[in-house]
Image (cartoon, rainbow, N blue to C red; front, side):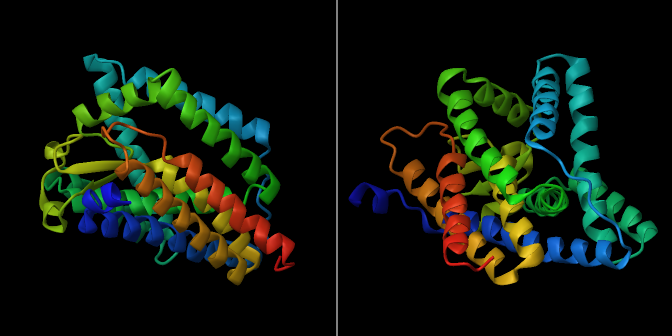
Length: 282
């Protein structure tokens, strides 16, 4: 505990806590909004099975791995993929509040701003909109059981990819070098949010929180919240507790090195879901 307090870094913790929490509660809001819109239009979401998700996940992983290779072509394609992902996520987000044409132009303006003024703050803002949008929409296309299975399986995958194969660390390193980060950049000091993204390097005043570490728990949070707001909030709070546990494990390391953040987050998110199941709140 003494070591933990010594390396706690209050501003870093509060920023990570804020970003993670806002993402979860945005997921709740968007899921209920999407569910309301679909119900009004009498649209039923097409369900995604575990096998479907695994296929999509493997395709995505192979694609990102291929694009993370060190070559000019892969670098160019990675830029396109990165921009398209942020643009699509932002467009989804804004389209729930304004008409599609306005959402398109507003998203384009934000993407341009992200590259003209590539600050950490603007990157995190855009990524927050994207990850909460994608996760909320996908959440409504799965059953809670499917999501629980995926959270557990991907937590194991996270451990394997970081500690055994190491391919996740290698991909992340390449993306950081290209300043194309599919995750959040969290500086040790709040004022560092106005740094350029190009200054974000591991062990030099910032840490990184992967998109999956934030987006995957939203699946369960948003899915529950779509039909039960109280249940969704409880699951979200447990997900936040998982993030705090992950932060504790990271800070408590004797030698700071990449570690899988998803296992404790998944564990606590699933625990929150099981508790509301047992209590009959679903």
